[in-house]
Length: 234
Image 1: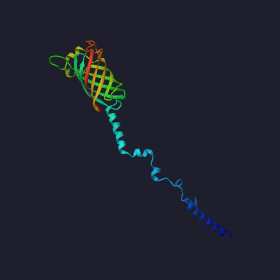
Image 2 (image 1 turned 135 degrees about the vertical axis):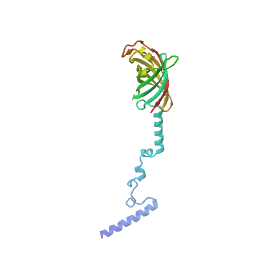
Image 3 (image 1 turned 120 degrees about the horizontal axis):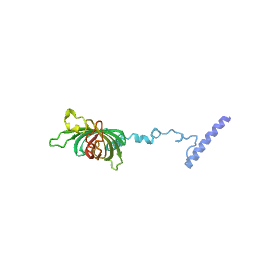
Image 4 (image 1 turned 30 degrees about the horizontal axis):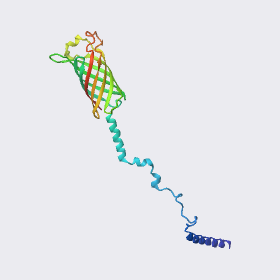
């Protein structure tokens, strides 16, 4: 009897609630409402997408960033990555010469350079006078422009060397064996393209001051050094 009465009471209460709700414009009771949005799981679109995912999915943005980084690197090669090779011409004292040199990177601000020069005698019948080998240390200096680099060089010069087939017997008048000198120069590189630069250097040479045999003409070729050429980077 009690059970029947409770069922009737519950039905009556539901009908009264629905009637009052219809008149007042209220929603259905909480026990009849659907689960709230707060209890529902977030949509896949909202839950899985993160702020960084959109940037990672943008291939055009990644390509632009990579291109910009590559362009910046090529415009300003640094010595701890790029090997250099170049030719040059100049004058040492009163003697003209042609040469070939290579740069070996040691750090972003240091490089070692090995140079081979062919000196020409200033005679009525020009011939190759002798060969010189130079080992130098380059120190990169600050610059304000991306297409220009400044540096200073201190180098040891071994000359005369390799009088092959006795091309110039006059070498023996200087020394029977190679002699040693010191040169100090400052240089400037202007990049014409990404990996090619025009080089201009100037400085002073101490001449032949130390020899492995007696130097018959002391301080030969002491004076001003001027040279220019092209340098390639790989």
